[in-house]
Image 1: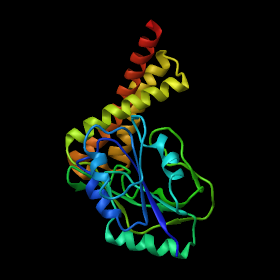
Image 2 (image 1 turned 180 degrees about the vertical axis):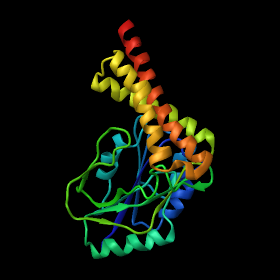
Image 3 (image 1 turned 180 degrees about the horizontal axis):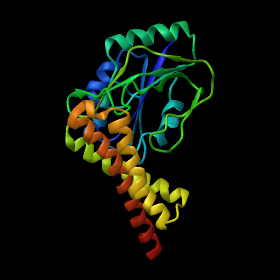
Amino acid sequence: MNKISTVLIVRNEEKKIRRCLESIKWCDEIVVVDQSSEDKTVEIVKEYTTKIYITEPKLICNPDREFGISKTSNEWILLIEADEVVDDNLKEEIKDVIQRSESEVYMVPVKTFFSGRWIKTCGWYPSYIPRLFKKGKINFQNEIHTNGIILTNKVGYLRNPLLHYSYEKIDDWIDKFKRYTTQYANEYMKKRIKINFINTFKELIIRPLYFFILKFFVLKGYIDGWRGFFISLSSALTVIFSYLKYIELKEMRRKK
């Protein structure tokens, strides 16, 4: 019988982590990589697993995913985050497919909730991502919002969604907004984007406008009312503030 390991990368998730862990305690192994949490996250995790590894703080999960996977002992891996939940329907489907092993990577639909409501537009649903796979069949990069490079053509799709409680209140959005803009600014720095009129116009006007139109009009964010508008606007603001933060970081380095 095939067994499955679940990998979580967490930091300061004491308010959400128990709900997530309760939903995956049926898994054969839970591996948690904690990015030096300063709250009770690790204390709660210890109730569910002894396989806890502490790393330095980071802004995103991706840099520690390969490390977490390397600490697992089973062939099948389920990646999950602290604000996500595996319900009974998805649990049974996962149990079934890993025994049949018709594919080596499974794309999982994600059902995201914003301020208590399931968001059906803005490209948020079904938003398939590779979260269930055999070890060694996905290579993860360190960049934000990348789902990894799939190293097999045996890819399947699950029917039941992973429940993602992304922003239960505006404070959650503010926290992620700060982290994401800093990370995007760092990625600008790595790519050594030139600060000139053309790039500034593109990053402060063209790209934000593109993302807002895409999410609100093309992907029908208006159907989800103020939530759809807020999500569309936040996509535009993330681009703007990431570029502004990049300019600030570059100026600080220049002065040093």
